[in-house]
Image 1 (tube, rainbow, N blue to C red):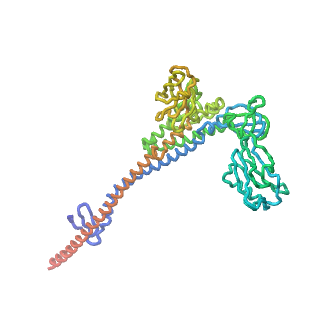
Image 2: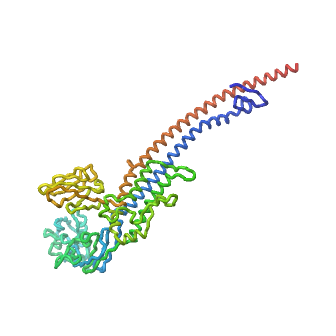
Image 3: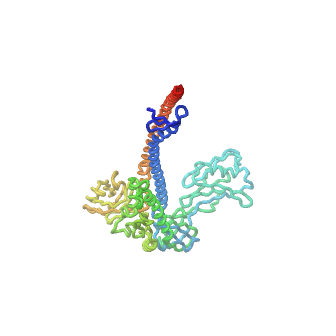
Length: 560
């Protein structure tokens, strides 16, 4: 480095100015400035890394909101959960009822003739004390009973008390439904046996094989016989016949109704749609869907004034989520038919997407509550079907009938079923244009694995020879459709948001490696500068001493 002019105490070297020379020269500030120039690249990397971390945080927040939406929708993804109905009984002392969403509105009459009961037996011989020995044989004995056709033997030790006997019966691993206890009449204690199941089949008999003298069959009195419940619905069955069930809680007699029998008697059950509860379900649906839509909108919007893009503007992962969410809520329901279904989408029910640019609800679902209530009053079941129908199937012809599907395998949709009947038996079949399996004995057609109709079973009812084509409509309402799609979108392994999160973490880690490398390089560079300027400092010190010596010599020469 060349040394420039010397003026007073300041020396200029090229573009760098030092204050003072030799030892004490301020090189630290110079080194800091040079290092700061190199550090700017690290700052760029850190800003870059933070942008990816911020995107990752946004993805996690959106994924959490989508999981919350799915959880919320799972509470209304069947007609029974979504379409709330009430059931009122005119004689609640005899019968009460609860209604599921598939219960038909209207009135049903009932007559309860008798309740289902369990069997109860009590010994005729009592004991003055619970500590009294009941095994007077002096050796081991046994007590045997038969419940619902299964015989159970209990080993009774010597010096056994009534309390011991009850405990032995209750803890026996072979006991499948008998409860033993002691009862007190104010003077003596007795053994009571109670079958825990109701119904005519829940028989309880003390066996003659019992060896305890006071616990043989003849010593027991039946205090209550087991029996089935008996009832009539809408006057049926006729004459002296009854519907019989082994319990007093019955859910397979009137579709959608669970009946709780209380005592004998007659009355009416009236089923109505709980419109307020259904409206609340719809409001929850709209609110939760809009939370996800709002988050996507905010993460991808571009400020119209500043033209500043949001953190995830143009991100394809969010575009996928946004597109799926909008299509599900706006498009026709999967498997619905315009020719047979009253509602095929949500728009006739008062739900629509706000397309007004700049509106506070732009891109969000709005609800016309008055329209929704009107449609619920008109046809609540049709509303429940488009919102929450879960693989509800029917056909366009009585020649075939929809039988069943396999959850998680069969896809909802409209399927053309083509088949040929030869000699009264199905001889060829396709579903949705794909080859299907068929059973010529049962005359059933089943969708093959690997096709959308996999596992769907169709029954052929018309066995007249010929070739036929009919349609099966297998419907999936909006809530369960969203639940299924959200499961895919939020999947920890294959969901687009989780895949992007993992990619962004990898990108952030790679940027951090660059930052670590740069920090090491800059640290080495700073040390190199210190070493160089240390040598320069020593050299300048030497020059300073020489300058001082020469100046002294010049002064002496001028005096002489």
